[in-house]
Length: 345
Ligand code: HEC
Image 1 (cartoon, rainbow, N blue to C red):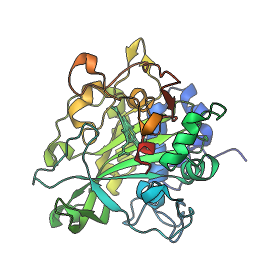
Image 2 (image 1 turned 30 degrees about the vertical axis):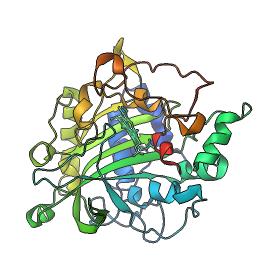
Image 3 (image 1 turned 90 degrees about the horizontal axis):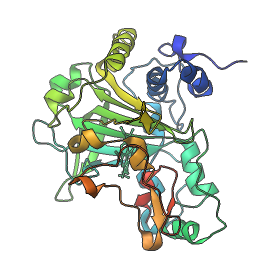
Image 4 (image 1 turned 180 degrees about the horizontal axis):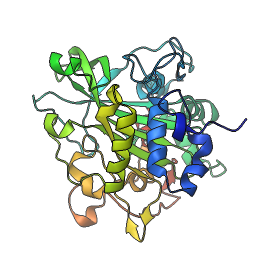
C-alpha cells in the first residue's frame, strides 16, 4: 500500500510525511513538509509507550505529544558516561533546563522569569548513538576519533530530534487555549527545584530525510509580546500564507496559535546563504543563524574538543552561514550535525 498523503489527511489522523518526502520536494513544498512533520510529532502520544502516536485521540488534546515521549538528552548522556537505560523505560518527566542559549545568554519572559529548554531524540537517533556506535560517552567518541578505520557517523533516515522551549504561564494564559501545556520542573539559581504549568513557545525539529537533514522551526504567535526576544526578520510571505492555511485547518485546537518561521534544506539558495532562526533560541544572532551550517560543525577532536561554531572574522557572536568551513579530518571528525553529542560525559 502506498504511504498516506499527509497533505490531505494530516490534521485528522496521525500521518508520517517522511515516506513521501520526494513528492513534497518535487513540488518545492518544503514548508508544507515542515508543517506535516510538526503535526505528526505533535500528535497525542499513546499512553505507556515511547514515541507512538495515539490515533484514537485528536490533535490538540491536552496530553503529552509524541516528541515529549522521546528520550530526553539527560537520559542519553548520563553521568560518568555510563550506558543509558534501554529505550522502553517509563518516562521520568525530565528536569527542564534554563534556556541559556548557545551564545551563553539566558532568555527571560516579560515577567523576568527564565524560559526553559528541553532536547529530545527519537528511537532511531537513540539507537544509533547508543547501540550502533556507542558514542553516548566521551570515551566512545574518543574511540571514534582515534580509530582511522571507523566509518563516518551517519544517522539513519528515520532519525529525528527536537529542541523545545517553554514559558511559565499565568492562570489566564493557561485557560486561553493558545498553548500546548505541560507540568514541568527545573532547578533554579539556588539549586532549588521549582515546578510550574508551562506553555510551549518554540520548537526546533529536524529529520534525516536527506543527508544534510531537514530543518524546521516553529513559534507560538504571541512570543513577541510575552518574551524579551525581538523579531529581527519577518516570516517570508510564502510561509505566512501557508501558516494562514494551516491555522485555519487547525481552528479550535491550540496548534492554530503556532506558526512556522521557516525551513532549511540547503546551505545556499539562489547563490545566497540561507538564514533561519527562532526568536526564542537564536535570539541575539538571528541574522547569522544557519541551522545547517552551524550543525555541520558538530564534531569531536582530541581531549573532547569540538570545532568552534562561531565565525569571529565578523565580530562578536556571529554564526557561520552558507557552505560550512571544511573540517580538517585529523583535527576534528564530523558527528553528522548532532550537536547534543557534546553533552557526553
Ligand atoms: C550557531 C550554531 C547553531 C545554530 C545557528 C543552530 N543551532 Fe541547533 N544547536 C546548536 C547546539 C550547540 C546545540 C546543542 C545544544 C545542547 O545540547 O544543549 C543545538 C541543538 C539543536 C537541536 C537538538 C538536537 C541536536 O542534538 O543537535 C536541534 C533539533 C536543533 N539544534 C535545531 C536547530 C535548528 C532547526 C536551527 C535553525 C533554525 C538551529 N538548530 C540553529 C547550535 C546551533
